[in-house]
Image (cartoon, rainbow, N blue to C red; front, side, top):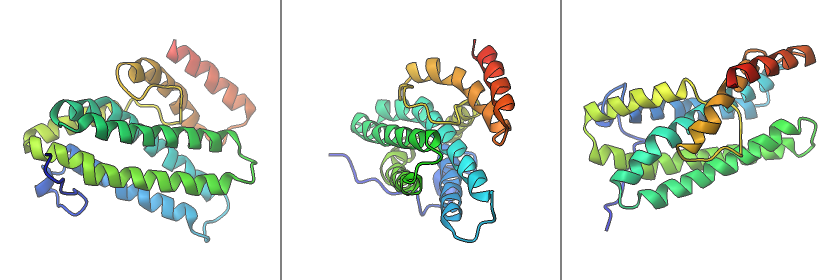
Length: 214
């Protein structure tokens, strides 16, 4: 029987392998994401800021998750007896988040948008809990500090080239996620540079992204 996991949520940097370990990199993203979701839901934001906060949330969610699926979950499947079950569950969560945020992005005027966003935030928070309480502790159990820092560097490198928008059709596992996802990253990051651009800006971004992806 697998020993109960100890959540990383209350552990300090020394216990998690240092500031550059994969566990600390994850821990820094999670409260940052939580704070952004709380800010989006606050009622005192000036006009225009909710859209900017939403864009920041989407970018962080998808670059973070893509790096997990590419670097962390294949590793977990190799080292943990229950790794397949755990990663399948979190991949299903990622897919549900992908599909819901894609619906939100494609329906800016839908009266159900606010409710869909709340649903997305609930899914994201559940995903964070599952990762910190179940998946990431397995890495701490098996790997020493140096290995955790090496995994952290690999995760950060992948995140730098990851998609930053929802793409529900991209597979959740390598190599399919890299083959289909990395070319889309160029498209996403050009959109991120000009989130408020008009039709001409969007057409230019699409053309440039298509050239980069090719």
